[in-house]
Amino acid sequence: MATVLRCKDVGFDCDGVIRAETEEEALQQAAQHAKEAHGLDEVTDEIIAQVQAAMRDA
Ligand SMILES: [Zn+2]
Image 1 (cartoon, rainbow, N blue to C red):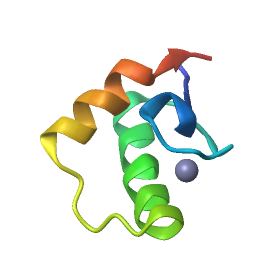
Image 2 (cartoon, rainbow, N blue to C red):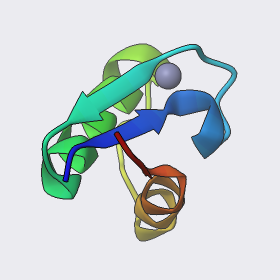
Image 3 (tube, rainbow, N blue to C red):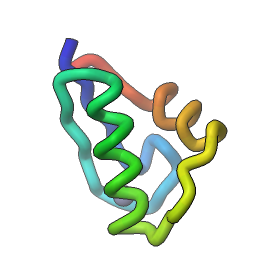
Image 4 (cartoon, rainbow, N blue to C red):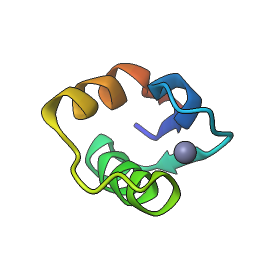
């Protein structure tokens, strides 16, 4: 199932949208986006939980 993730749904003031074919891929892209766009070096379990909660079926 394809997944879409809106960065602002995770709590960032950001229009970034991540689309991926799997939840795992979306998590990887989210981690990379958080690092590049938001300077977040460490993706904690808490952030992963927030990302998973914000994922929607595309
Ligand atoms: Zn963002």
